[in-house]
Image (cartoon, helix red, strand yellow):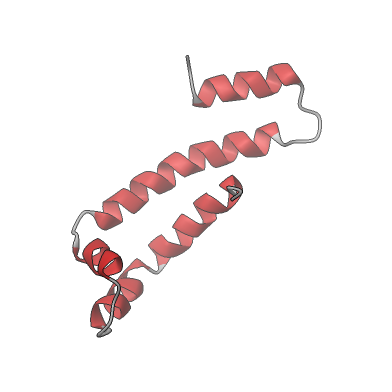
Length: 86
């Protein structure tokens, strides 16, 4: 399965914008999958989503820069080292 890294940040952003309505919906249905019920009942779930969003935003910007038009191998390496310093 291919990972669509550039889709992760916008997906998290959408979930965060709709978090309360999603929570209300899933906790109100009778046959809510256990994993969703546990997720929305956990008070720190929204915080984890914000954390993941912040992390994915950094990665998202790096991927956009690396996939730009006139990017050299050195530019790409510098961007990768910015995100994942060794």
